[in-house]
Image (cartoon, rainbow, N blue to C red):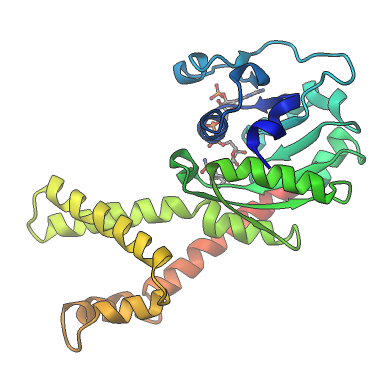
Length: 275
Ligand SMILES: NC(=O)C1=CN([C@@H]2O[C@H](COP(=O)(O)OP(=O)(O)OC[C@H]3O[C@@H](n4cnc5c(N)ncnc54)[C@H](OP(=O)(O)O)[C@@H]3O)[C@@H](O)[C@H]2O)C=CC1
Ligand SMILES: O=C(O)[C@@H]1CCC=N1
C-alpha cells in the first residue's frame, strides 16, 4: 500500500519536533502532498514552515472531511494539554497513531473513547535518515487494515516490527527507542579513548564514527551472527582479545552495564505509563 494512498484523507501531526519532523520528511519523500498534512505545534521549525504543510490551521469539522489519521508525537508530559483538542475525532473514522514513550493504549482510550482505533508505536531517531525501526501494536478496535495502514506509514522512516503484547513496549523502548543514544555515547567514548592514546580529536572521532557505522552495516548485511563477526575480528592473543577481556568482564564489563542501562530505560517507561 502506497503512503500517498494512506494519506489520501489527510494526516494531522500533533507535535512536530525531532520525531514528528523525521516522519513528515519520510512521507513527503514518498509523495504525500503537503496540502494533505496538518501540523499542530506551537513552534514549528523553519524546515516545517517551508514544506507547504498546513500549520496550526483548524481541522475540518464536517464528518467525512476530518483527517483519516492523527499521529501523536508530543512529549508524554505534554499529552494532557495537547490531546483534548483532538478528542472530537475519537470514536470515529480517524485512526490514531502515537509514538509517545510510556503512554499506554488505555490512556488514549480514556481520553479519546474506547471505540477509537489506536496504534501505539515506538520509533527511533535513525528515522531521520530513513534507517529507523518502529515497533507497533494496536488496541482491540484496530482492525488488520488499520494496523497495515499504520505499518505502511511508519515504513516511510525505516523498518517496522509488530508486537504481540503491549507490555513488550517498555523493553522495546529500552532497546531500540533509546538505543541510538547508547550507540552515540559509544562513539563519544571510543573517540575519547583514542584521544587518550594520543590521537588528534578529529581523527579519533572520524575513526570512531566510521567504525560504528561500518560495523552496524556489516552486522545487518552479513550472514554471520554478531558473535561470529566479533570472533572474526579477534586474533588469538592479539589486540582485540586484550580489549575484550576488559569489555567482557562479568561484573563490570559491557554486558553487565548494558543490562543495567536497558533495565533503567525499561523501568522508566513503565513509570511513565503509570503516570
Ligand atoms: N526522540 C526520540 O528518540 C524518540 C522520541 N519518541 C517519542 O516521540 C515524542 C516526541 O519526541 P521528540 O520528537 O523527541 O520531542 P520534541 O520535543 O522534539 O518534539 C515535540 C514537539 O511537540 C511540540 N509541542 C509541545 N506542546 C505541544 C502542544 N500542546 N501541541 C502540539 N505540539 C506541542 C513541541 O514544541 P516545543 O518544542 O515548542 O515545546 C515540539 O515541537 C515523545 O513522546 C517521545 O517519547 C519516541 C521514540 C524515540
Ligand atoms: O528518552 C525518551 O523518553 C524518548 C523515548 C525513546 C527515546 N527517547
